[in-house]
Image 1 (tube, rainbow, N blue to C red):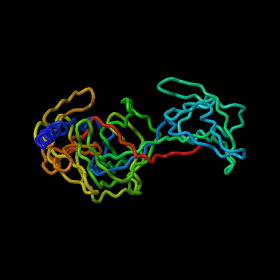
Image 2: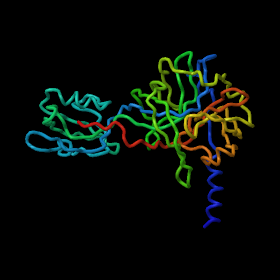
Image 3: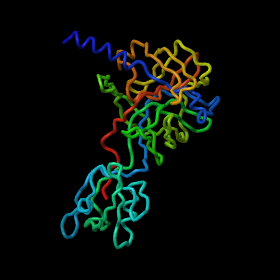
Image 4: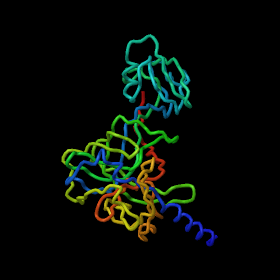
Length: 332
């Protein structure tokens, strides 16, 4: 058993320490800071508002005549996407209350289930306590997770993070309606095992980094919170992919608490014209980081990469978000 475990650990280290990275060339549309650019590497908590309203549960509505669930009676199920009500697009949970409060004789719900579109007729009822119309569903219109900030652009009031897009399980990019990015604190690390990537475990703080505006192939970008304090951050200049070379570099990341630390890596391949904007491959050499995490784990994506004193890119990898269970469930 111990022999097998030892060999297995060696394999894991080989698998998780070879990763791809984005070059600063892919950030050019966003990194405009000049003298006002600061190095990231610290954790962030993301609450992103999506453009889809997903049913996460069916519930009963208490009326003056007892309990019932119009949604269940109509055939709505957990996992359904409520796309339209009477032909009007539903892009946030508040739309449901707004639409069913209108004086319509019937309510036609357009539902997306397994990629197929269904039309279901739902008859809202009056909730006894509030007097409002309800259909008996729990929905979510936001997603949450942990990641790492790449840089702060103080001059232009912007920030960059994650180094990869937030995607659905099928790999499709998730459209967002904005969101809030909070400061984070890491309290534990789960090392990767075969078939399951490791992850940083952390909590959200109440203080904000800023508002999310864009979810794209390079990560999540947004507007920096007014008065954001950069006094403890390191000013940095950038270098294009043409200046990146095979050899020693460093990543800046946080694997415990809020303290950013520097870890040694090697750039083992440079690809200036990669179609997926993954312009170089890095290998983790730092013994301390390998002992703590086994390499790169979920939550470290977006960690900035520095070579010759300049910011050259950010860590990225195939990423499956571990959603926080308590995410914006609302009763309608």
